[in-house]
Amino acid sequence: MALKIEVADLGLPAIDALDVDAVGVFVGPERPLQGFAGFIDWRMCGAISRTIRNELFHAGRGEALLLPTGGRIAPTRLFCFGLPDAPLTPEAFLPAARAGLEALARAGSEAFAVAMPPLAGGDPSLAARLWLEASLSRPVRRQVLLGDARQLQRELAAARNTLAVEVEVIAPPSRVEMPRRARALPHVGGVLR
Image 1 (tube, rainbow, N blue to C red):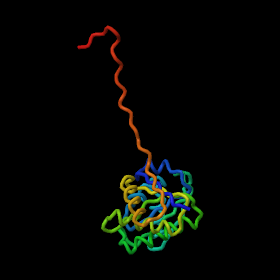
Image 2: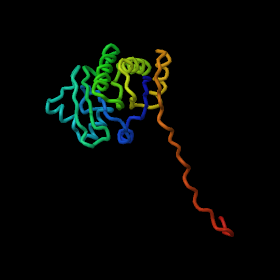
Image 3: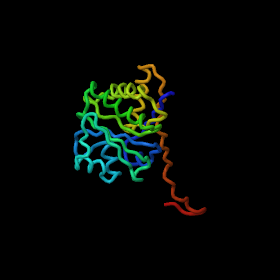
């Protein structure tokens, strides 16, 4: 099965439009939660923050949490994966990404939404290559990867070519905005000044 990755801009509109069966969130030590974890926590009315505050989830290395979404977002399951540090070194990024992606696949998810954990140094090409390596260990039917959609598409396509693997990277549809409607023309015989 060829891996299919759809990219989308990170934000509440993309989260509200998700048509997947699960969401995977990498949670680091930062408080309040940032990035994708922060957006999902907002939509979940602080459910992730409450589990951390109540010490049910410490967001540590290898720790995972499954929460029902209760209809607050379209996907029914929310998986949270703890990170040892944020940002991650390349040596820590691959095992963390692989563990999260494999957990989603083992849970029977065929389509899920996720955002890459932060990589130390912020090298987007290295992060994309490592993400593809982790994704290919146990591919699913469809992944929706949230972040900067244009950059993700560019870096994932380059990583796909470098690794010479069969991965379909799908960009979000372009938004075409119609020009503002012109005011009505004056009636015939009208005087323009």
